Length: 89
Ligand code: SF4
Image (cartoon, rainbow, N blue to C red; front, side, top):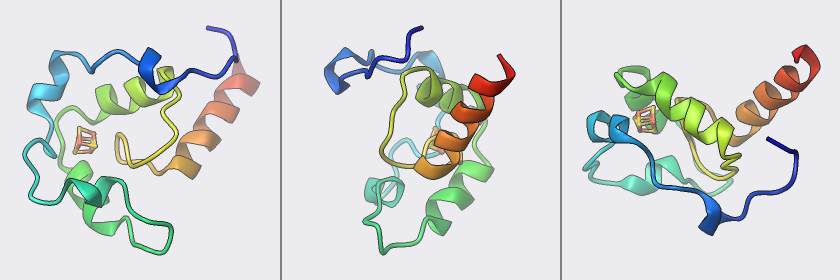
């Protein structure tokens, strides 16, 4: 995949793995999309126990989803992972 920016409407819906997501049906989905001054701790705690965490992280990395917590990683952490992958590959 090229390094071109992916527009949000170009991102396909998650695969079947999403049906097993620990955050599915969460009372407060905004926990995964906090404002800059809010903590990620509550979302991270749910992600920690999620059975599809690797799938979720892979999806967010592949489609370069920039906003929110995916696979138990913040936006900043995912950017670091992507940079490391670019160096390794
Ligand atoms: S890893 Fe976190 S954000 Fe991803 S599906 Fe699981 S609970 Fe939801």
